[in-house]
Image 1 (cartoon, rainbow, N blue to C red):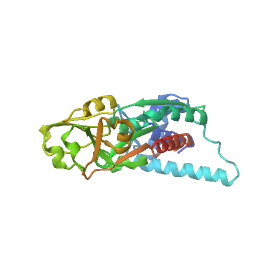
Image 2: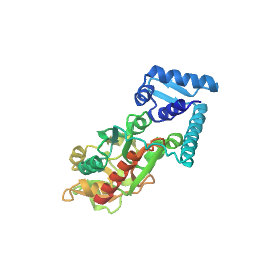
Image 3: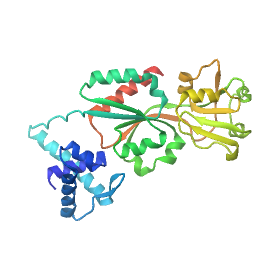
Length: 301
């Protein structure tokens, strides 16, 4: 294994793309592919599975990646011990943040300004996406960091242990879940909502964060999940609508003269407001943005 092949393996673990890896190394996709094929021939193993959605490591490839990381660490330690410090890694030209959480919306101007002042050489790209695309976007290198708000049950059901092991999950805040309803709703008279209360009649159930199914009779529900607050506020004004969201989001975004919130008994709660990135994305700039976001959000809640 040559040093340049080691670096290609490490970068492919981040990008999952021969094209993006080639761009990082100022070369062609064909050149990267040839180097990897030579490495596979030398080791007599298949390192990557290739598909239209990108590349993923085989079982043997994961072992090669682990060894490459160890070799990189050993090389850096060698340089350090010989008094030859490796050059500091240059900051990336751009950093992409995907978010499906409305919690970040009113903090975004300050986050952008603070990050731009701290790291002027990196352009920050921010995109609102659906909850369902967050994980795949990270794993396929479409974004570097993601902001997600989910309840514990959703996380358990939709993120396998194998995928979770590839991700760094930074829980910024743990949050209670509440059912937001209109003041005129019959449920507003109750101090605590149960599964029977929610299942008692035909309702529209929706969430500002991903939700799983709460009720007993699926035919009695319209389930709607999105982070469009204007639609949620309009829906919640109806007596037969319940919005499941986090307590912080209720306090920040729902006018108290129109809406009230009730605690809800359910085992998949509470909510987590979290930042995600791949474990192989360790650049200091990523960690800087995480710290800025965490500081800003916790300051405003």
